[in-house]
Image (cartoon, rainbow, N blue to C red):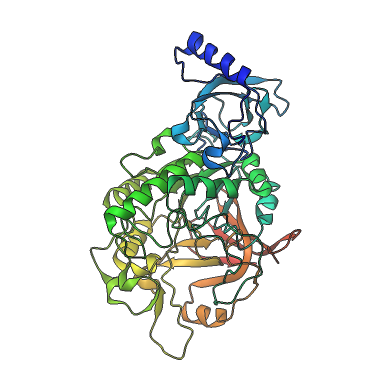
Length: 521
């Protein structure tokens, strides 16, 4: 057994230091020496505003072992933030506690920094120092911003493929990355994994353990994902705005319900464990610390006067999917006037933001597709929609689109589909007024290698003329925004089941401010 990775002398010295400086004899001070490197899960930053951001790490010398190989005691961790990569100009430093109750994760919130500035950060515990990370503060909310580049990515099933796309995104110099969710997948380890068409995918790598339910299970799964070097490189290259979708807990869950018919009071226990593990592993603020089994993740980021970024939660407050979920033909439930996607409180919050905002662009950063696409591929003319998207919630979708009407600057950023889409958002189930544009970013790895065109794409586009682009490769979305123009590049890879795939721009979509229309090149 070598899970207690502290020397005896270091632990004694640490305990003495805790008594004299903190008055907390249970705290192990940071003079200890680890037998193995404690920063195996890398570093991350996120939730930047004009004054600061959050920096994150987690001590885990044995990341897949129970408790990450850490003793059951708080451990002091030092941190520092600098204006230069060499840390010659340190502007903030201090120490904090990595507590066992939170898996020895560390969340430090920085404030009183300069706006629109790049900073570097790192951690130290005992004699061990973490890798350094890079993050940028936002411009002041009332400042003019001439241009901005940021990334959109998510859906990173560990078993389906390698994270080559994250390595490429790390080199794109984004100001930040919006992660739309599905950071982990909850299934048990298997050498057989199937794609969208039911066919086995090439074996790449397997999850450790069975399907996950407990807090320890979720912690181990996050550790397994976070050990990936390409994912660590992406987190170290830019700050993230994190949200979650379904697989952080269970496929297609909403509210207090899962797909398996688990009693709600039982599912909520699993949900609470999963949300705690999500918080422990994400660079998010203390306001997102789970309370009574729920979590606050919808929030707003103002990027100067250029972008008002509304980060949404389409899982916790949603009504149960109609017609038993899935892809269903003409389901009467999708017309339910009482059905919710955001829930009333979040919907009111968003609508107030849209009314009060003065930025050149409104970006709705969320998880599931808004366009109510008819996915019928057979000979039947009966429309089929994805009940786990806004397509299963006509009333909620039409309320949202009505609020976007007249803005002339609405961009919706979406994931979940494991495909790239670009389309115009139209009222009246896609047949009415154009009020915005939706970009759906494909997956990092989920779905395996894919192809430029999925069978049936031509029919989908004929049935849904507001859809202007579809693609079935892996990758990410790269947005370059100016006050009058939004350019979205669909960056794709030919394969993810083996290493070394180059990244290319498959297509580029542009939107001119004031006109809800797409131009593809």
